Length: 376
Ligand SMILES: [Zn+2]
Image (tube, rainbow, N blue to C red; front, side):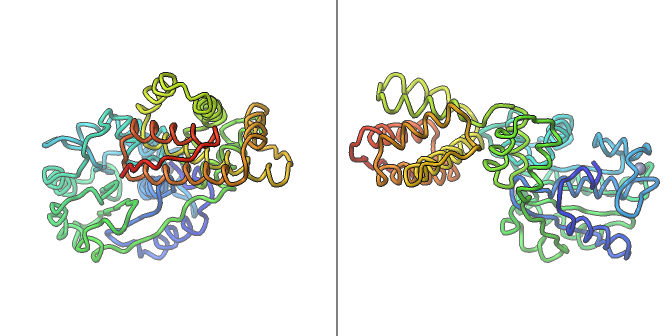
C-alpha cells in the first residue's frame, strides 16, 4: 500500500515522512485512531516505504520487488501479529486469512476480522505464546530489506503477557521497528504505553470518503451521497457499502417498518430471526441509517421539502410516516433507534434487541404507548 492510495490525512502522512527524513523515527511507534480510520493503512504504507528500494520524497515507488511484496503483505522482513481465538493458536496460522481480509479492507475492525476468519462470537487475544513468537521474529536475520519490522495490530488484546514485550519495546535489536496499531489507546497496558512514542490518526473527513466512493466507480450520485453520510467518516463501513452496491439498508428498513406497522407477530419474528444472524457492525449501521431516515421524516413533517439523498422508494416511506405520525411520535421513534444503537454497541443479544425494538415500533406506528423493555 502506498501513502497516495489512502485518501486525505495529509498532515499525518507528512508527520510520518518528516520523522523519517530527520532520522527520528522511533524504534517503537504507537499509531492509534478510531474504528474505520486510517491507522492500519498508514502503518502498512510506512512499512512499504521503509522496505522500498527507491523511495521518493513522499511515497514508495510502488514498483520495485520489495514494494510488490509489501503490497501483498508477504515481505519477509515485515512481520505481523494480531488477535486470534483459541489457546495456543498463533497469528501465523491465520496469516493467509488476515492478509486477505486486510487487502480487501485495510480499514477493518476486530469484528470484521472475526467474521472473515470465522471466529465470530469467540474471545480473541494475543497470547503469551504469540508474544514469544514475536520475540523470535525480531531475533531473525534481515532477509532482503534494510529493516526488520514487527507490526502488532490491536495491541489492546495483549493481556498481562504484554509485559513480556517491555524489554523488546524499550530496546529493540538494531535495524528494527515495532509498530503498534491500536484502536483504543486507553485499553493498552500502561507499561507499554509509557515506552512508545505515539501518533494519533483522526477519523476520515466526508470529503475523503467521498473521494474513495468516486474512485470505486459508483455512478449513482444519490447512492454515493447516501454512503458518505451513513459512513460518518468510517472507511470500513463505506467500503462495505460500496461492495454491496445498494442503498445501504434502505429496502430492509422500509420493509421492516411496514411489518412492524402491520404488527403480525409471526412475520416480525421471522424477520428478526433472519436479520439477527448478521454481525454487530451491520446491526449498528442499519440502526444508524434508520435514525437518519427518521430524522428526515421529522424534518419533512416540519418543512416538506425533498432532499436528493433518498431515493423514490425511501421518499414514499418518509412521506407516509410524516403524514401518519405526530411530531412527538416521530421523536419517540428517533429515541428508540438512538437507544438501540447504544444497546448494540454494548453487545445486547441481537434477537432480543430486535424483537423488543420491533414491538416498540409497532406501538408507536399504531399510536399506542410504548412499553419499556429493559435490554441491558
Ligand atoms: Zn519500491
